[in-house]
Length: 500
Image (cartoon, rainbow, N blue to C red; front, side, top):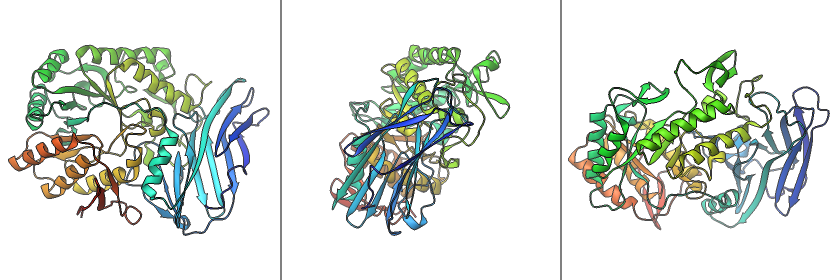
């Protein structure tokens, strides 16, 4: 990518129907460019920018992903790279590293296609699966940033580049660690069980001034994986449960899914119409916004200190990131109730609403659009679920996402690569212990999911909790050769893990 000339591009605007008045303005300064879109009568769907240049097919390319990763991250030779690259990418050619992408919180979903003949950026500015009705408004779609690094370590280059994309992160002051009950309970839990979990977390963190969290995952509410967000009979009064947590020296956290409810009193007018069905709440509807505010206010009133909000990308756009390619939704001919904003603007407004209502609660985004939640959440789940049952899933999903998105940690948010799941003897402890050790040394959040532990496991967990309180610097060393790196540099010393 040495001959990539930033100012040279062609522009194409794709509209719903004929383009009569939509136009793009690009404001460039040095190695950055801002793309603006204006339309009065036309309904823009996409803006394409193209740069024509030749690249050798031995260039190695690493991109990002729309929301979580799904074992799909890794360096590929340009000749084999047939995938879209959401948000940004790094291209390595000899001693030259070139990074190109867009700053966080854009007003379009941006992906790249890069091959030996050039580069195309696709800016998805639709409203849902339809053209956006700007009605004369000018919207700043994205800020593009180009950086080149000569003779620099590739991981260092990517870390530095991420800092240019997000300049206003929101980070907790202390290590975030503790328990989450999903990967051993899988939704089958109760008040008695979660209090036992809290007592175990307090035991494991004994002597640490920074108290651990105990996060109650799906299973506490009336309906499985759905609202209304009120406790079921197995959990009872949540305010008194929080007090029980606090008496045990544990900080209370809780999970919820803001855009899906089975409350029969919710009218269809509050839901998205997609493929002839109305199932998920529409975040552009004022009554939905009020409902979400009420739900979060209730959780705050109970006394919770951490809120994990989940399923927001699939509920808004009908697909998980693993099923997406160049765009954020595969379903066409649908739209949100408010058609005047792009999907990215709507997503950003939705996350801002949650942030504003949450106040000083710590937020964990899960299935959140990574590039849009950056700066609004303290933690973001960067990969799909690990497992308490299947070691291959933990290895493939956990290690992959930690290695290839670690450069975002402490820059966009704290990057949560997910739990160490401990369920009876489903996963050999000599394997899970290594995942625990890497997380504790990575400088990222450390969550474990354990209902009961052997004395050996308790000893290792106690040591990992104490280790996680320190500042650590970790990086993958063999990440250009494998998708699950085994060789790591931790605090200046090389360490090898045996994942297989």
